[in-house]
Length: 236
Image (cartoon, rainbow, N blue to C red; front, side):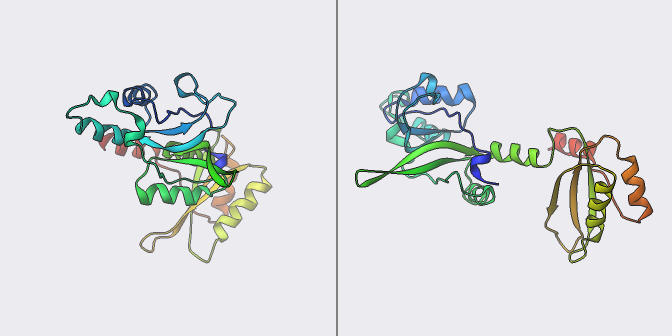
């Protein structure tokens, strides 16, 4: 899966000459943590419905504004300009960067979002064209879609040992035989010597025939404990 498959294309941006007061209003209004800073055709409230390209100049985060507020001894922070506090060299990805690589960058660097850019050659110089934004929310939505969370069906957990995926292979063969659609299959790396666990999303609300065949063949399975997960979340 590539960044272009999950990134946000409808962007809200600011320019270097915008005030921090304006930027803070956009962050509050849309509940964002960051705003790309661009040179390009202005648009109402920063929506990039413009026909002209937007060239990335930097990235402004809510933390940048917080630091400006704390340092505003003489000049009111709202009157300062974005270009005074923005990050002029933000970490970026391209539309063809893998989602796995982008997620690794977000986690390792503690970032909430990455500008998605393409590079354009103009008169002996290269300009950075903003084409999207990849956020942690985008990755969570992509994961939920990959797991089939937005489609009708149910999940099964299939344990198996490394080097012996027979239970998983038999499940897939039985599902095909019974015309049960497998919407997704995710295998999480094992921890502390525990058996590997495959999460299989089935496109059916009547899994009884498949479950009976699994029992006949001695294949172990279980269901996610959704109630337990909700209680754990509430306690947190």
